[in-house]
Image: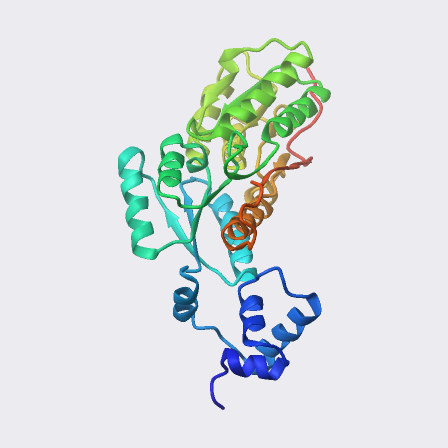
Length: 340
């Protein structure tokens, strides 16, 4: 059997070649019935578009880059899951680009990446979604981009985030409702806007409930298990030990649980522990971690969808999409009522 072409698909579906091209490129001006008929023809004829020819015809590479630097492997896996799903639905390819560079070295690296791959656009994850020099560079180069989990929703860029501050407020209030007043907090990496937002939520909950803020109960981690372990040793060896610890992600919270076990502290009877992100480790350890589930896959999926819409739309200028998604508090066995 000869390889299917756009012409053979058009003949099989009873439509024009231009209509097939519109369906292939996810253009909006095609009726749902016609779109379904052409898509069925793709399947029946096992039609596979030539990515090189497609790119040349539209002056695009059909490649979206995803830039990340995050010590949490589960977070990046979820980002990739959402990104791959969106690219698949839009017939795009995804290029994952891990990067630990900063400053001019980062800009040179991204410039070389764009020249080498002819990326159609970039999705920026924390901490890159909040780096002013990188954002200015991309704007200057006219490289379309979308930001996942930024600290602020800009008026001139696609920005999708979850309500980190409110979620941190809610989990701190949960601990307070259980009778805890000495609640320690382990910060995340200082370059990540989520670190500031989650700390702010913690402080607001203390203030609302007239609980004194104690600086000695706060330590800085960097979202890694080892940093959580170091912070836990400092906090749990204080002369006046807190009755609860809220860590900015689940890996650090899991490290607190380890240190508590080494100190023969019963969880949650003697120490309540809460995390953030609902990483797999939160469900796989015992006691299971009380945490916040972020819609990471959905955030990334929406970011890529809106990014592709921006440079494929027939409209001259689509409104910039900004959205805050709701995170969910998940109450598990690691938190309990405070008892003297």
